[in-house]
Length: 398
Image (cartoon, rainbow, N blue to C red; front, side, top):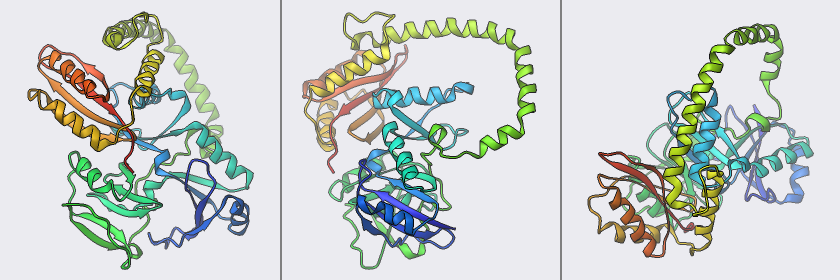
């Protein structure tokens, strides 16, 4: 089926490149054509096909969220709460798209709501039939395992999972590969390019060349996350299905009312548990909040304000510099274990644990003395071992 493919270069949704493709036969060797903002109307009128819109990867945050065993109907709220904790931003300004709600951890893509609203308005303004909004990463072909690498727009796309990957510059690519290799086992790396394309420098890693003309794009017949979900769906097949099952829904509502009393009793118990959890959260966050913050305050906003304050008081640092400063501080605490290292956006994150809580706090203080904006989040204190997430903030190298 014919599709119009448009990839914007920035969140301004101005300059772009486009191609007219046939999903049945299209290879990863896409015949892109560059265009400016003023040419969008002409491209839309000359190619009246269903639209697949590609957003710059730097505008989309990909993450995996561990779900509680009994998330149930509150699944979306639980996902958004954990995303908010990772980003340290108000979730009300972010749109969270879910890959597979039945998986655990759940793969999600996060993008600014204002950007999604502009995408919808742009499609409607030019009478485009928008069928998908995808992160740029899913242009990269994907065989289902290992790692795949290809040239994107002004950078390289590295995909190392169904819903995992990143985009970086050529200079930052070797360091990124070393960082990712700590969490993902891949080698060699499949390099998708033309015969005339010069492969990138990847340090000690081995590249295995695959022609673009022999691979399918990553958004066809491969896992992907469509950002066009819930309120940002221009049309939904579920609406017609809901009308067809109207009376079944009414009967189900009656059955739910019959069980309402039992649910009300259970809800009271949950409210008591929630109050206890909130008190525990306050005790956990109290050392990191201003002294005037009480247990009845909005802990979420207070913590976000505190993080923003600390971030504004620190100079931006590249992830390599952050890694160096952490290594220097870590040398004095050999008893602290590091179970995971991740780099996303402007943050270098270490999952750490120790039998002694004071050692974790001492490590945090040592990192901060190096002039690094560091925070200890998701602290889990147990008698036998304490763990947490040490977040170092800086800026992208690329």
